[in-house]
Length: 196
Image (tube, rainbow, N blue to C red; front, side, top):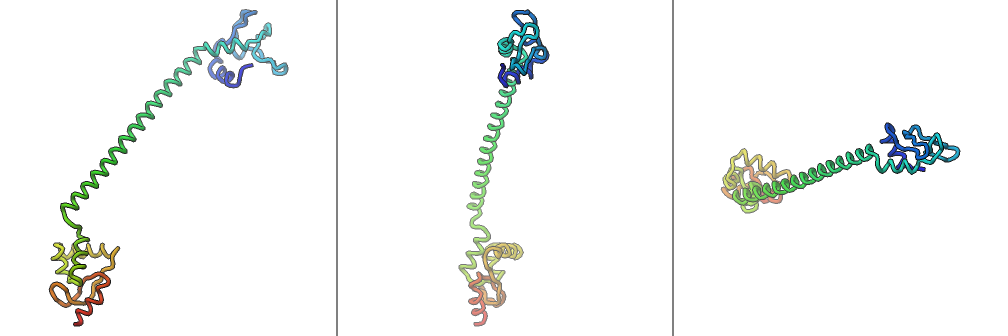
């Protein structure tokens, strides 16, 4: 009896041609013409003389051109898929390397701009506030080399993460009394100086 896989292969590829020849009768048969006795548990026999044709079917499985062509086609498709997969993997590696190189260049560019341009505007404002204490907007703009509008935008951005106050007091740089800018802890000192 043929195995399940042998039956599957022969029915998939060999329904349209001769699959076995009876040695006694010298007759050739297609798969649909071969006898099968389910009750007697005899399969694949010559319908004329009842000779077992299982070995002839197995021999056909080994020599069938249709099966060979199908296997060759599958091997070719597998090779193509493997090459495509390798190509995609190589492309992914190249993209990853290019992305890493690009990220490195961006970081280096940012570092060089930061080094060439000196400290950032936030760092400049923080440095002036720490050094000079409460300071008026005009003095802070002069000290950080920025316009009043740019200073307003920068302070609004800084306020999102650092507590900065604007209160009535005396400017530690020019001595004018009015609104002064300082870190949150400087509010009292600015008001004290304004009151003095």
